[in-house]
Length: 185
Image 1 (cartoon, one colour):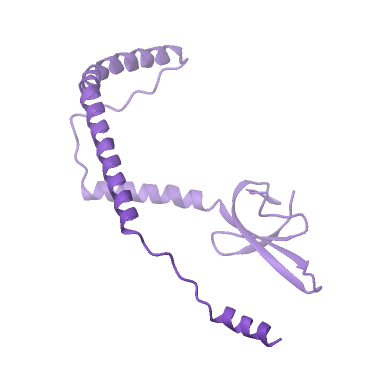
Image 2 (cartoon, rainbow, N blue to C red; image 1 turned 135 degrees about the vertical axis):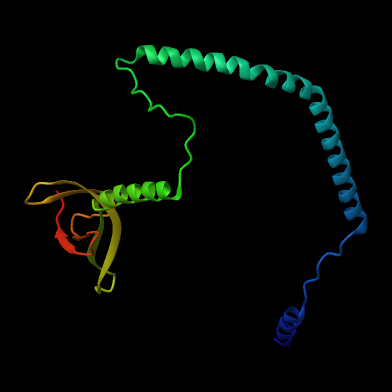
């Protein structure tokens, strides 16, 4: 019994030693890495020296052929369309925009964004469930939706299916922070 106890104590006192690092092996790996790197660099230089003149020659010829091909395809596409494209407004030279012109463009873009923003809503879905200990808990999913139409009686809103579950309470938050209850159709 004492022998067994003595063996346990000796086992507990044992220490795991790491294998010593062999300088010869490290030198071999380093030398192999240098040789492989040199061979890779030499191969890359030879391939580049062989293919670079051909690539430059093709690059110099390529833009001319692309322009003719694009021009032909554009003319073919224009002939296939039934109605001609709307003419671009003619400008007399280049007109520099002033600070007021930029401000006017910014205001126009802001008004377009404001109109579109009124049709974006936040959808909140709350699902009640019980855990394994029969405790009631609720999970809440949120997502965005777009108002498709207003029938006068109801708003039809399009949203992702993964947000809304069949047995959930759904609420919609509008841009003006007002909320309304919703149902799934």
